[in-house]
Amino acid sequence: MPANVYYDHDADTALIADKRVAILGYGSQGHAHALNLRDSGVDVVVGLREGSASRAKAEAAGLRVLPTAEAVRGADIVMVLLPDTEQKKVYETDIAPNLADGNSLAFAHGFNIHFGQITPPAGVDVWMIAPKGPGHLVRRTYEEGGGVPCLVAVANDATGKAKQTALAYAKAIGGTRAGVLDTTFEEETETDLFGEQVVLCGGLVELIRNGFETLVEAGYQPESAYFETLHEVKLIVDLIYEGGIAAMNYSISDTAEYGEMTRGPRIITPQTKDEMRRILAEIRSGEFAKEWIAENEQGRPNFDRLREEAAKHPIEEVGARLRAMMPWISAGKAKVQDVSGG
Ligand code: NAD
Ligand code: MG
Image (cartoon, rainbow, N blue to C red):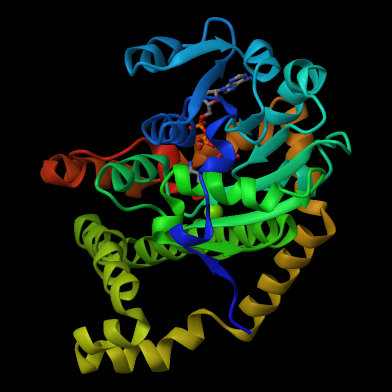
């Protein structure tokens, strides 16, 4: 069954015209939501912690900035665009004491609601508008007259208007120009984690590193290995993004296509797929969430060690050298967080 997709004519910004929206956080998503809402005529205030480095930036863009608790107190809709690992703490100290019945508590990712880290009171609408793209694109496409597709979900409908309020918000940030797809907090959270762990980040990075290592260990130049196993990934992914796998196959040589069809299944084997199922099960049972929450509570010892190790991989040194000779590659690139969809 095809999913419901909402467009501009399905949403009415009049529903939020007399409401104040507090945007908490002014990072990748925060700056884009705040500016798009403001430009759509919505009353916006940005909530930041004391001493936030983002304060000057938000004020320079003409936005009103308040301490988080005060921003929540004066708002009808509170959109939480803080790092997912910070949300529980900020919810308990600054958000919960200042929420009133009939308010909306909104998210761009379902993690904290779905895994029970945040449990809002029954009188508050809880919904999600999750742009399926980085914040700088949410802003840029809006300014160009377009938008980034979004997901909409409602976890609690206290007012009976949660879904329509969420769609009005999506319209004001440009989402309904591109399409807003119905989902649930459960589906958004679980598919997002699965995608980043198995395909987009975890799977892809291991594929690249192991391919690079295999060539270098066999005596090939690291520069050749870098171009073959990392640089060209973008060229192939662009073709897949534009026309699907079939169109990519149309563009590559028959030799490449034959190699793909006969060798690909030897790399991603039935055992690999079994492991994908195990990873999905860990996500669905909450085991992954529990592990990641505990890791944060302990001050991220494993995260920091793994990050340090990854940075020392030879592919980083070769890559830095080669990319320095191709300055157009990084010109205008957005901040690193922008590559992760949630
Ligand atoms: P970010 O890291 O870019 O920005 C977070 C903001 O919160 C920054 O302004 C930071 O200074 C501020 N902040 C950090 N700790 C804080 C604290 N303790 N108290 C107050 N403010 C604090 O985050 P982001 O990538 O914009 O993510 C925000 C939400 O959007 C997350 O739920 C994420 O999953 C979701 N999301 C992100 C993307 C993306 O492409 N980045 C896409 C879809 C959804
Ligand atoms: Mg994502």
